Image (cartoon, rainbow, N blue to C red; front, side):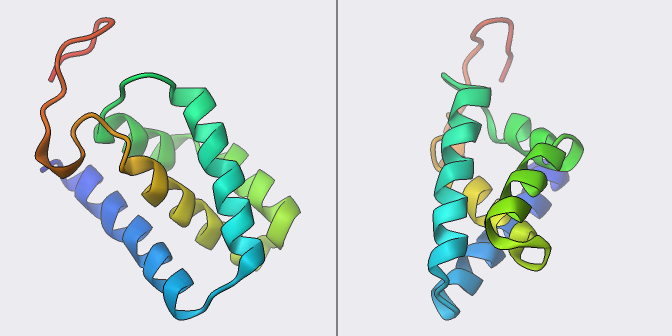
Length: 106
C-alpha cells in the first residue's frame, strides 16, 4: 500500500477510535456533515489515494467547516472521523482494485 495512504488511514482510524472512547455528539455531527461534503467533492468511484491526496493537500475547507461547528481544538478530530467514514466507500477499500474510469488507472 502507498505509504501516504497507509499513514492517512491510520490517522483517520485513530480519530474514530477516539470518538468511540470519548463520545462527542458535536464532533460526530460535524463529521457526518463533512462526509456528505466529501461525497459531493469526490462523487462517483474514487480511490483511497485520491482521498488521501485531498486530505494531505487540500483539507483547509474541511478544517474551516469543522472549526465553525466544534471549535478549532476538535476540528481535526472531526475531519479525521469524516475521512475514515468516507474511505469505506473507496473503490479499493479493503483490497479492491480500482479499474480505469474517467481517465483514472489502477
